[in-house]
Length: 480
Image (tube, rainbow, N blue to C red; front, side):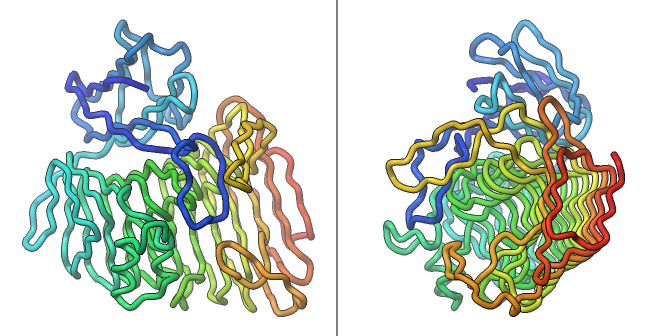
């Protein structure tokens, strides 16, 4: 985009990240996707001051069409002789598109941050650092300060009272995926294996992993270029707060945003997630050693850009532990690929239970054209740029049913009676679609004798066609 950015006359550093250029994906082939499927983008991050005038100067003529998303923010913007002038009143995250979604400046306006050093902290000041895998001890604080770029990962196994703070960047671009064997075992995979965990645990690892932790706080940092799910909270973590983090530069296969897996009492708020794959995932027990429910999870006041897959998802796997009391509230989707809000099951168990799920005060920015998702079948395949896609606003269903064969493969099922799936009390309230384009539709699909959906409510949901399959029990639709 080639722009310069000034806050109250002071020039800010414009950072770069690599993102997916189009929705082209494949089942993990044992090596990472090619970089010719990606493009560069830019971002700035700063703390708000008493007066907050943000000036953007373009290297060439100011584009005729400029759009700020989320559209509902309605940030005051005026054209000047040198570019654009924006006035920001409170902490927020947004994108400024100069002509298209391929020329974007991501803007992260943070609340003021005053950090006091504490004994025994791990401190990373301005400049580049290459620590590799960072493993804080219980009770320790990690500060990635403004101006710091830390190349590596944070791994927390069974720790308590750990705090991660700062305004700097945790960059995982030097890490390979745990089951990427193209150059031998990755550093992160080897460290996890040394700790006595399984090869599958190593495969499900990334730039930030918390496994069986208590009272964990993560605030303010930027995570860039994760090799897999960017933030993984799993195996009965409890008392977790993730606040005002920013995820960008997720272009690699299966690079989800934030996955909360089989844990309890977790809050994710005030954060920006641009991920190649799903953005926010409430994930039931499925990974190795997971034998607890997913309960009391809140995603609140987040801005999402989903380049592939689902923006907000409740996902149940193959173990019979319930998912209960999950809320997505006051979230805004700036771009979408397949599904905005989803409740689903893969693989299934003898007793899959999903209860008390709430999506409320959600705003989805429309696109006039959606480029179709495409699976890459061979090395010779190229993306076709088809524009015949129509994502869904809401999907409640069972997506794949059968034994887990690994690498997203599902075995055939001869006797469906061994599965008992039940969803109960799922509510969508005050869901709005913004901007030009057609309203996205809704799919509610129960399966008689297999998946029972009870007490599902659409309360003031701005949706297109509602397709109902299998007759969910007690479907309540209130007009927008």
